[in-house]
Length: 352
Image (cartoon, rainbow, N blue to C red; front, side, top):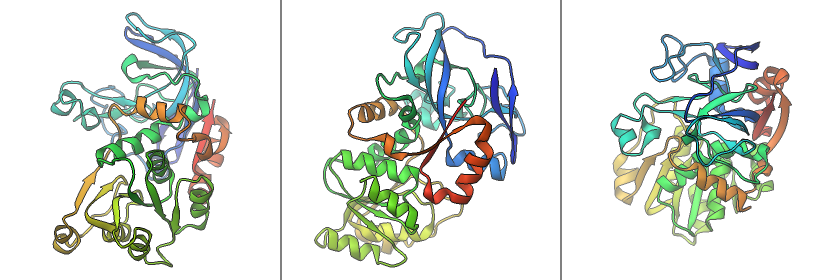
């Protein structure tokens, strides 16, 4: 079968590889669409970072680079293994692309997104979406019913936003501020809108501001380089401030502005990965406002809820698909386009 394998910095190859073996408790899937994620771009342009197994085999998959690429994908079941129940040939599904040990304290507490040995299908081994076939454990294959397969490829990033919203303890109603209108920021905003929140989006890119407006996920879009975000939020909330804020940008100025936009007792949920440490005035920015900072990573038991949100129409994932490309064009029309023109794209989908 054909598959895209990741060898290292700026080195992916479309190759012929053996088809994966169907094992008990697994299903064979023909991937339909695979989304390109920000982590894929980091891996391609910057080189291997954990959990990509560059220097030694991954402790769960036992594989080392090269590995089949792609972890945001949808597809159709073509074969079911011994002992599989509740899934059948022909089912359209998505894959929760985690590989976990099932034995460490977080796994035992059902916080498997914090597994001590955690890896990702499509990054750490065990195949990936950029292949003609992939075999995956049944437990990580939720069906999507009548949700179109292209939209299904966005369930994985939608689940990231779902986990962040739930982790932040958001209740229906109120006001949220989101820093950064990239894919995760936009999808998190869509979830919040579906829960009856008023959403203020903070973004400096003109193209991304336009996307936030055109998709309808924000009630108000603010350019913090031209406007005082905390002042705008206070005016928008009749002087109260936002109930919750989400950092989907990963830079200190955004964190500072979001904390200042919160009402007393409000919460900042950090979803973005920060590549540099952030210095805070804990007394002035946090303690004196009785505020809370939380951090959210990945997802655990969130995919089914994300699927239902999309299937119900409460979140229209089609709005966030900006391009579909062939696997043969993945470097030029995928990775390089997102690097050079990423502000005009939300999600680029790849088909085999």
